[in-house]
Image (cartoon, rainbow, N blue to C red):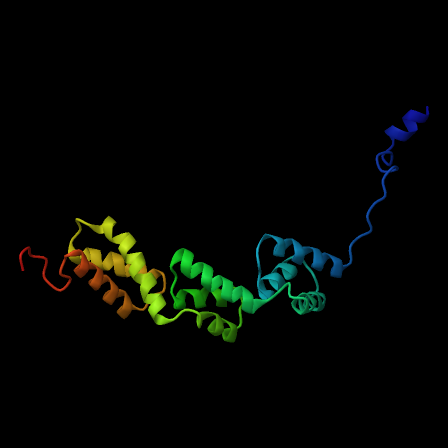
Length: 188
């Protein structure tokens, strides 16, 4: 009979275990933040948005986020600097595109400007040249105007100013042997 009592009732499966007490909102907020920060760095706003989505009260969120900033787990300036370095080197994004991405992630405008200071216009132009050189081969055989549009369009989508994009493309075409200012007639 005893076996039947222990295993058959609706409470029988829980008797040997202790249930965890419900977490306080502060504990929930800390757990959510730590879980998100484990995957990759996040801005304060990204974490605040995640806490808000999960129903954590704003005052609790602000308290936890402020504490994490104090101990260095949240550092928007470091995030912005690393983001600029990574996205410029990895994807070839220009300052304008990087600034837009950082603003979308909730980084304050002054921190965005400070992070973008690590990129000077010479470095940005060098990256544009490298991007054009990589793409140049795939446009061979196309009309000159079409090549210019495709290459300049690629740079524009990455946030490069129009003047710089056209200058870099024309120089690359000239270096390749195609006069970017001619009408496309051979021998002229």
